[in-house]
Length: 176
Image (cartoon, rainbow, N blue to C red; front, side, top):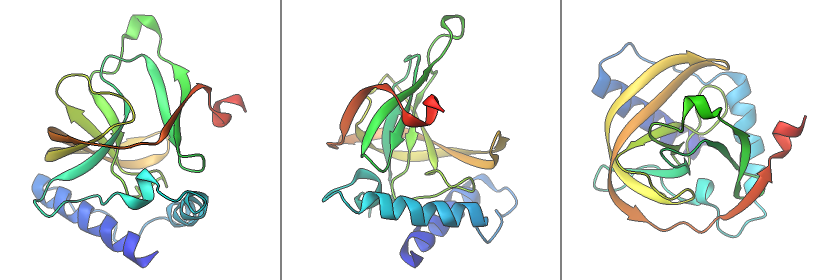
């Protein structure tokens, strides 16, 4: 778990330094640390796992991102770490249109809310479920319904391959 926290701290410090904003809290909230432990346990049954096994950063300084939601898609996809697949959480109203950017997460990271660190990948629509490599061009520091959040914006530089399964239907979390 220390390896994960060190990588997370590295990613946060790189992105926050680039944006020149006040430093993020030096310690993750207890809820995030507990979620990290649950996520690692949930990923254990899988021989290969996109979140657990893909490095967040590459030797050339680029960041890896897993695309959950392609640009212009009205479906709100979520990656379920336990089953290693994307599932549809909900549909965006037609009047809102689709997502304005490709939306996903950075593997092997954890944000303050216990979810993987979000990434917005600029450019044309990408295929959901694919890994991309990009250059961080900005960071949004904000608060959402779960509290403090950071979201990286990246320009896609090269696609890589990911092979998690994709399930159509409503995720377990939205059925509650």
